[in-house]
Structure formats: structure tokens, C-alpha cells
Image (cartoon, protein in one colour):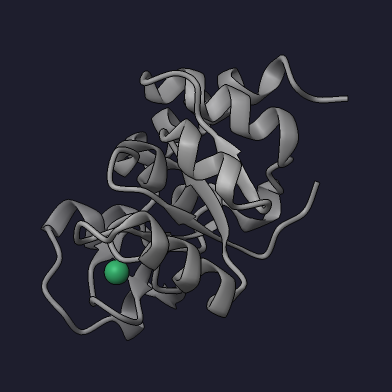
Length: 155
Ligand SMILES: [Zn+2]
């Protein structure tokens, strides 16, 4: 199944960050909108709704009811339906959903820990919030986890 953009309700913060790391564009509910407001927002913006609220999911056709409240289980359920594309991993900022721009280390003028400057060839800069990410042990750990999660659902 393919959906362009998602909207996650306020119960799904951790899932949201993981999905963004996997390259799924997810808008996160920041305030307590009413069910009607969520539905009208998603309809207007063509967003596929992810929710822990069964009632709400039944009212909106383009939605996915998250049965589990454990994010790893949610990720498994999600990736069984929406296949992640490894080409898109690390293209979206987990904090704000902005695009990450691959930047040569010598072209990045902001502050970086010395070790990062020495060891990394490039960094990933969020074009919206400016947060900087780099490869290394953190990326590896995330990739490993993603592979574990998606292993059972690959065909
Ligand atoms: Zn950002």
C-alpha cells in the first residue's frame, strides 16, 4: 500500500519519529484537536490518519488503527502494510519532518564536535529546524533496529 503523507494522533509520538527516520512524511498532532477537526484537516490535506482511537478510525476511511500501544509493535503493523523504501531512510528530520540535506562536512560551517569533523565525510542538515545529524554508531543502531522490525514483513 502506498500513501503519500500521514497524520499521527497525539498518542503516537515515538512512532512518528521512527517513521520519519524511515522516510515516511508524518505530521504529528501537536494540540488536542477534536475528532471532527482531525478528520477535516486530514481530508483537506489528503493525509492518511494513524490513530490509537478506534472510533475515530472508523469515521475516516483513509486511516489505520494502531492496536498496540507499544511503538515497536506499531512499527511492525505499519510496515506490514506500508513497505519502507531503504532509499528514503534518513531523508526526513525525526524532530520536525523537514527534509534532511546531505552536506559535505567541509561545506558545513556550524559547530560540530571535533570527532565528527575528523571522522565524517558528510552531515545531514534539516532545512526546517537546522538540526544536524551524522552517520556512525547512532545511524547503525537505528538501521539495525529498522531491519529487525521489517524482517518479518518483507516479501
Ligand atoms: Zn528538523
